[in-house]
Length: 187
Image (cartoon, rainbow, N blue to C red; front, side, top):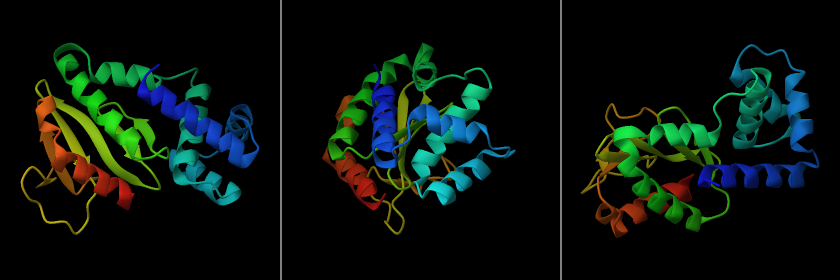
């Protein structure tokens, strides 16, 4: 089981426990809605059931996938990101994920086609295999001056204020862990 699958299963368990509704019930509720946009369904779930954005987003994504007959799952998206020339970056991803999961049980992983978004109440970081030799760690650290490895994100990703470029396990040092923890604490 990948980290993403375990985190998603944990998120479903927590949602089911806090709401009293099963995953199937959530997906059925979402499937009955006729919203044309993903964000409309997410906003409806948040306002109608007073659930957080991450949970509403999870329900909306899974309902859309179910309606489409299944779309690439988290495992498939992650496998595609770290395939071929980028396969050598998977150990860096795994090392970062191990650290992220030590920060707290409330981290939600949301894999996309090109990266994995890390969320709490909002996105605090993302991990993206940008080249065959570099994994980029995007961080949301508003009002923090870039210094050392921590650079302004520039055109890297509009969802992040900063980026750290990582090529080897040695690059994941105490400063990287500090900035990742700082972003987590702000998320």
